[in-house]
Length: 285
Image (tube, rainbow, N blue to C red; front, top):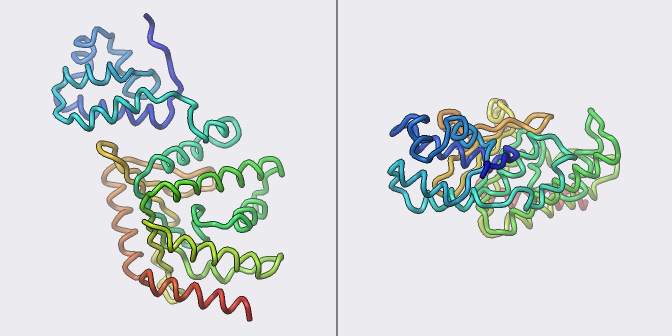
């Protein structure tokens, strides 16, 4: 029976990439393909995520490669079996750019997220009013219809906070001084949103104070995502087109060091809450 070709989603690419990681140290691609009764083109496409592989085939291939990681093999096999287009973000597949769609999928699968933005409130912590303001008032305006799509997608992403992930967010205090034409009510709601989020289990929220030297965060916004074994960490750097993400261990490690440095000069969690309350009280005077 001919192998059915599949859309190279992030999950398919990660399945193929993990199989390649296990294969490369022990066997050439051609030899591994022969053991499975495949041609080398098929294995190459599986490792690139453009062809599907079943969970049974994952287990069989890993057995032939001598992979001594039962839990890791089973995790990859289950991921290979997951139907394409079975997640909430599939409804946005033809409505937003592929880089952003890839990011949404990676974010939704993460077990731990570290996020830092030097200018605005990070998306996972934005109130509905703030989301709409950020999207509809951006300099590169989108159509009203597309704006609604982007608002809906950003709010839907926030569901990750309700499933017990760990979130460490570094929020610039300067963002709390933003002025909006609609008045101070928008920022009041946003600060309440931050305070509510800071009380959620697994959420660690730190404010980057106004007095911080501008070199901290000067490299832009970043998100670092960690996953169940055996998946690699992923780091994403924001851009107007949806950002760029990498699994390269050296690059991820560099951004982890950058994040830790910014976290070290941010206010502690309790003092961050105190500062948020001070800003909220100031908006009521």
